[in-house]
Image (cartoon, rainbow, N blue to C red; front, top):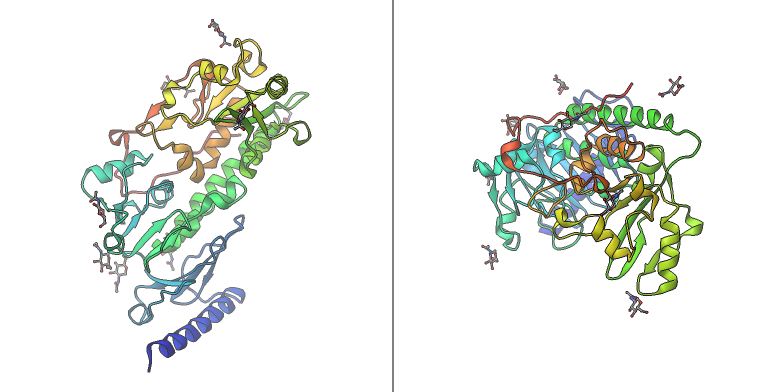
Amino acid sequence: MSPSSSLLQLSFLFSLFLWLGCAIAATPPVPVGNISRVEDAEYFNIYYGHTFKVIKNGVDGMSYLLIQNTSRMATKTKYCTPRIKSFVVPLANYSVDTTYFPVSFFELLGMVGSMKGITSDSITSECVLQWYQSGEIELVNKTDPKQLTQFSAHFIGTTEGQQACNFATFLPSEEDTPLQRAEWIKYLGTFGNLETRANEVFDAVKTNYLCLSRAAANKTTSFKPVVAWLLYSEGMWSFVKEEYKMKYVVDAGGESLDDSISKSIYNVSIPDDLDNFHAILCTIDVVIDETYAPEPTAYTISTFLDNTKAQDNSSFPFLTNGRFWRYDKRIHDAAPLDWFDGGISQPQLVLADLIEAFFPSGNYNTTYFRNLGKEEGVISIVPDKCGRDSSTPMDPVIVPCQ
Ligand SMILES: *[C@@H]1O[C@H](CO)[C@@H](O)[C@H](O)[C@H]1NC(C)=O
Ligand SMILES: *[C@@H]1O[C@H](CO)[C@@H](O)[C@H](O)[C@H]1NC(C)=O
Ligand SMILES: *[C@@H]1O[C@H](CO)[C@@H](O)[C@H](O)[C@H]1NC(C)=O
Ligand SMILES: *[C@@H]1O[C@H](CO)[C@@H](O)[C@H](O)[C@H]1NC(C)=O
Ligand SMILES: *[C@@H]1O[C@H](CO)[C@@H](O)[C@H](O)[C@H]1NC(C)=O
Ligand SMILES: *[C@@H]1O[C@H](CO)[C@@H](O)[C@H](O)[C@H]1NC(C)=O
Ligand SMILES: *[C@@H]1O[C@H](CO)[C@@H](O)[C@H](O)[C@H]1NC(C)=O
Ligand SMILES: *[C@@H]1O[C@H](CO)[C@@H](O)[C@H](O)[C@H]1NC(C)=O
């Protein structure tokens, strides 16, 4: 049999398996153990068969056939096509392209023990850094293809570039709401047969998030605080309107700046633009300043005042009422922000921060946001602060909520 006809036959078999799997999932499932069902996320799905499962990634169209290591299929079947790849699960080991990859999902699952390679130590997790420091994880050279194929799987956070047979994409940030992003823990959990754990974590996170959101809805007196996410770059200020950020604002009891009054970009060198921008700023109760800062500790209210060409700190309500924030509180070596890692896997903490930002109580310590109005500093992420054995699961933080 020629290689291509055997491949054809394999893909036929695969379709059959898929069909069987879907049929099984639709009718009462045969006892296949613990399964995850997708409730909120839009961009992935999981189908269960008897000895395998299939994840479909709706962002890049990839299907991953995950074959149980105890089944006969595990030794016989291997797929690596542009749309279908196979993996034997639970993964014996894996590596991660740590550029913009939220490793905290692995921690919540308790999968850090089999993490054996990372492409850089730009990571915002104390415990993964400690695991690396203790010699359990090796640094792999991203530009050397051989080094990326030595593990059972190599997880990447982008759809760009060449992908080897063991690459698997993980793309929670493509979702539009905080809970949808967090539910991607179920996607990773399937690679470790950790569905039960993934379900537990997501349920705990979601319950806490929804409780906090209900409590926030009660805090508003007559008006909701008006909130803006701002960004300054190359002489221009803009309002950031990503879906999940708008959702956070609503869920934390605030209101986003009305679309109808804000043009999107303001050039500070054009006097009319600057006047318009200042006028709008005067209507805003809470500002989250996302401006990139190579040295986050050096970004203060005076940086903001310089960038807005404003004279003093008494001109804007969010400055006089101390509600001027940035999400760079937890950082590792000035570069990666935990906002892009833990902030994705534990949205209940982000929500709790925002509720404190919108309705300051003074007795809640925020996790990701620092109050520039109070000259709050940053927290450096260092391996010594890992408070547990890195290979054990991290529990999500549940914020007190009645
Ligand atoms: C399902 O998960 C629970 C808790 O992790 C475990 O005790 C049980 O053995 C699992 N069942 C199967 C069939 O894997
Ligand atoms: C399957 O995976 C489990 C858990 O990692 C391991 O204990 C077992 O030895 C593996 N079985 C085979 C046949 O590889
Ligand atoms: C990584 O691999 C590439 C290609 O093999 C090589 O040119 C480069 O020197 C390596 N970098 C390091 C730091 O070893
Ligand atoms: C990863 O696990 C696979 C499957 O058990 C094994 O063949 C491979 O040698 C392991 N890779 C490394 C680098 O340990
Ligand atoms: C909202 O406030 C009302 C009146 O104070 C109270 O009865 C109710 O339990 C609160 N709801 C929540 C979800 O906190
Ligand atoms: C902003 O306006 C100034 C003055 O008109 C102009 O020179 C500059 O190119 C503008 N900046 C951008 C990014 O368009
Ligand atoms: C504004 O600036 C003055 C002088 O620099 C300072 O004393 C005051 O605390 C600042 N107020 C706020 C709200 O930051
Ligand atoms: C906030 O953190 C400070 C410093 O670690 C601590 O002293 C204080 O008790 C904390 N406050 C609350 C409400 O947890």
